[in-house]
Length: 360
View 1 (tube, rainbow, N blue to C red):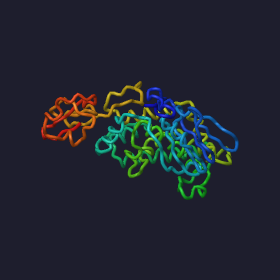
View 2 (cartoon, rainbow, N blue to C red):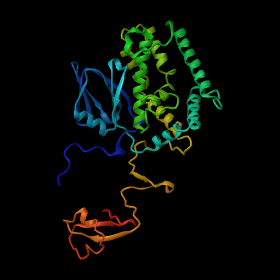
View 3 (spheres, helix red, strand yellow):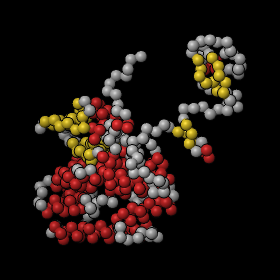
View 4 (cartoon, rainbow, N blue to C red):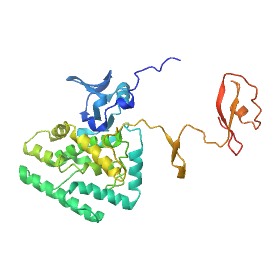
C-alpha cells in the first residue's frame, strides 16, 4: 500500500510547548497560505512568513481568506486559530487544541461541579490579585466587592498618573466607536488579551466555558484568567495610549499588548497560573510537557482506568476462520464450527462472553 499523500504531521513531542510560543498575530484583509512549515500572510504590501509551530494564536479579522493548506498546517502544529470581528473586538470561533491528555479538563470539570471546590478556586484566583491579604473564609459576594474596589482604584490611579479623564467603563459590541478613546483602547487591548488567554486554555485542553467566577458564557474561564492580568497590562496600556494622543488606539492597543508579551514571560505565567489553580490538590511537576501522547483509556468504575482497544470478556477461545467468513458465521453457537480451517486469515482473538454472544 502506498503512503498517505501530503506532508507528514510532526510528532507531538517535537511541538513547542504552549508557554514557549509566540503570543498572537492579528491579520485582516489578506490571504493566508502555506509555504513548507510556515504560514504566509499576503496583502497589498507583500508577504510575511510566520513559523506555525511557534505561534500561539492566529487572529483572523474581516477580509481575511485562509487556504486549506494553511489551516492544515496550523492544526498539525496545534496552533490555535480564532476568527474575530472588526478591530478584533468580537470572537466567533477557534480551532484545535495542543493537549492530548484530558487531565486538566477532568480536574476543571470536577472543581467547577462542587460549590465548595468552586469557591476555593475562586478564592485562589483572588488571592493572586491580593498577595498581601488573606481571602480565606470570604464569601463570593465579599470577593466580588474587593475586586470591584481594586479595579476602580486602578482606573483612578492610571487617570491621575496620565492626566486622562475617566468617567467609568463603557463597552458595547455594537457601539464600539461611540465610546470615548480610553474605553476603545481598553476594549481592543482586552480582546487581544482574551485571544492569548483563550489560546493557552484550549492548548492545555481545558474548557473555555467552565468558569469559576464568570458563568453561563462560552468563554467564562477565559474571562476568569484574563481578569488576573488586566490591572497589570491592559489598563495602564490604554491610559498610556490615550495620553500619547495616538490616532488609532485600537491598532495601537493590539501592538502594545504584543510588545508587552514578546519576551515570552506572559505565556509561561499564564500556563503556570492555570495549572496551579486546577492541579493544586495534585503533585504538579513544572517540567512536565503540556503535549502528552496519551493512549485512550476506559473507565471501569471502582477499578479505575484500564487499557482501551482490548476485549474484557471473561472467556477467550482461539480459533481460525476462512477469509470469506462473515459476522453471521462467527455468531454461530457451535464452538467447533471453525475447527480444522488452515486459512492464513486468522482471527487473533475470538471472544465469547458469558451471555453467549460472540465478538471479534
